[in-house]
Amino acid sequence: MGFKGTLRPGLVQLRVLDFDKTLDFYKNILGLNEVCRTDDGRICLKGYDEFDHHSVTLRLADEAGLDYVAFKVGSSEELEKMKQAVEAFGYPVDEVAAESNQPGFGIRYGFTISTGHRFEIYSEVELSGQGPMTRNPDIWVEEPRGMRAQRMDHFLLYGPNIAEAERFCQEVFGMFVPEVCNTPDGSRLASWITGSNKPHDLAFVEYPEAGKLHHVGFYLCNWSEIGQAADLIAIHHLKMDIGPTRHAITRGQSIYFWEPSGNRIEVYAGGYTAYPDNPQRVWDSDQLGRGLFYYSGEVIPSFLEIVT
Amino acid sequence: MTGTGMESKEYQIQVEDTGEQFVCKENEVILEAMKRTGCGPIRYGCFGGGCGICRMKIVSGSYAVVKKMSRTHVTEGEAKNGIVLICCVKPRANLVIARIKAIKKG
Image (cartoon, rainbow over all chains, first blue to last red):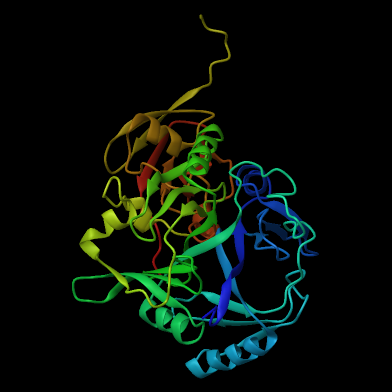
């Protein structure tokens, strides 16, 4: 069995407070490449190992946070079917015309899920002129910069009613849920969800305020690159939240820190290989510290409280 | 090394509800000084004006906002009334600051 629904989270649009220090962070420290700028002044970026046109759009705004996330599906036929499934699930769908506000992207369908986040789906997107080689390919075209982020990997979203969001991802996106965390009364506190072999394409934490972003995760090669990312955080005086550490949940290696506009970023490496037929891993909420930060075993308050 | 005449000015910052007091240099944002001295209610946050965890009120004294503060956490009206994110503010005089609810829940 291959991918059943979505291929991956392919695009995030983030709000940033400036295009000076913040853009310098994304390009020269995180290591994304600038692809283009839109007529209304947004900046499109991608990781060096991503084929599609771009994966991160930055919008200058008066507040930090997330505008929306978008998931790629395999074909226009599947896209139309998925659109109908979204409507059948009960979320009204709007249409964003091709090439309207994300350069290179075909038609996108958008809707708001229970946690208050805008999700979009699309199937058509141009390949980037800066993509990886395909014929007798070298490992990269231009030497990666800074933290050498390969690609946008996942995001953690905070909002209400994550049980419904989790069900939506399974029923409509064809995803599965390798790992969850429950409160003593059995309700969901957190959920890690994937439509691929990655341990998570996205995750949710139950939170009273709708539509919040906890972090966007970018993929690095290995533990050694995580260490180099920590060096860069120190050299550039970026604000560390926690790490370098290991998650027991997803088993990835990780650092959380804040970019200059206050959006939390994770650099992430490793993680187990997820299969939809494997049993689900279940965490009790009183063990969450160990699940999140395996070495210290303790949750730090900022990690649970600070979102944009 | 003796004085060069280039030392930066220092201001006293007082936290109203706890009585804590610490020194903030003129080229330092208040949150950085709070962290450096271990005084005051807040230890860290994004330091970028985005997360809102360091939302406080400047009760008295003049100050400069040196970085954009997210409108999610400080509205235009609030900014006029001394509500700030102290990671974005440098003192221009001795200040009295007060703790307020850190993040609005909606």
